[in-house]
Amino acid sequence: MADNASVLSVSIVTPDGRVYDNQGTFLAVTTKLGQLGIMPNHVPVISSLEVDVVRVKHGDEEDKIAVNGGFLEFSNNTATIVADSAERQDDIDVARAENARQRAEATIKKAQAAHDADNLARAQVALRRAVNRINVAKH
Image 1: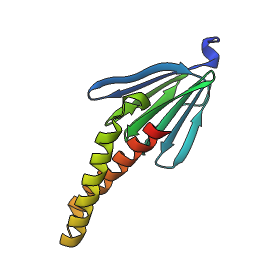
Image 2: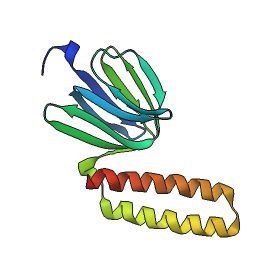
Image 3: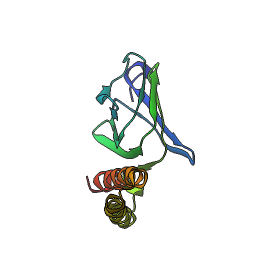
Image 4: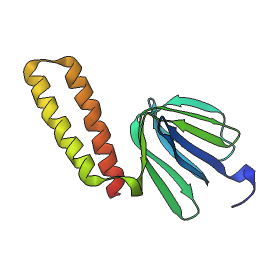
């Protein structure tokens, strides 16, 4: 790639270890306030992340990583994402994600019938995570 002033170093870590470590020319994330695109020499940023896809563009390619919450810190052309969990597009087991989606949907129905707000909230988060993984794997 070009000189360090025209690239980003992007790292994604979870409690299980480093999931992603590469350089790119553009980073796209979804924060609690909306979409955020970061190019080299962007102003420093710290932000909470939504359950969504993180995209890292490098050359003509784009890496997609399913990120389940966490936060982003960016400064000096270095982006670090600390996530609850994350999976690269090629590492996602679609069948497992589909099973998780079905389990979450069943739990949502049971929680709604029982008027159990805590289990409903947990199941809704699990559903968002499963759908995110499925979407990242298929696109």
